[in-house]
Length: 241
Image 1 (cartoon, rainbow, N blue to C red):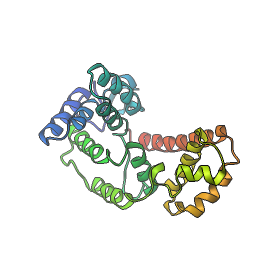
Image 2: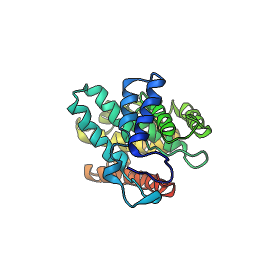
Image 3: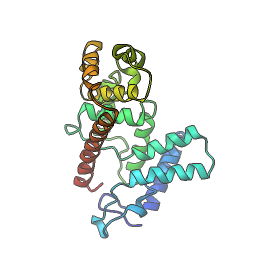
Image 4: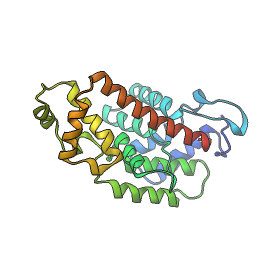
């Protein structure tokens, strides 16, 4: 299948070249599988013809297809989940001066800090498979710098200054789904501004958030997630990704 103006090879050859790069580097099985499968959904998502065609959403569809492939080939659950994540987030956008530290924290939160190095290796393979001569350009090196810079910032519920048992004690509520919703609501705010990750601030916000119903908390989290996704889609359209 022919691709758009960002590629000189067909989807098939691009994927094979990406795989060949990871094999030559002796990267892990997870990285090699992700390199082979990262664009598996392009035939399903192609819109338009010629060099201006698009493949919007191929990373999301591709993650679902990859899960099916991994299950059919009887790979372990752990490896399958890792490869699916690498395929799902392989299209992350990063341009120096355009992407904020909070965006990098969200990327870390989504893919997991334990997977970020492998995700960058998949991006290297994607670049080489596209015919670009340099696997690690300046902007990828700059991203590594920012990742290192924010590596100690809170990117998961476990890294919040307030634990689940403290939430229960602070609000005098029983353990349940709302505790998780409250913690994830706090995390959403802390991802934007790590300085907010103090017990004093989180306790104050906790009482404010407790006034909302579980449905309102879920809706708020969905709106945040949708806003982030829409922002990413706009960037992808801008660069014909």
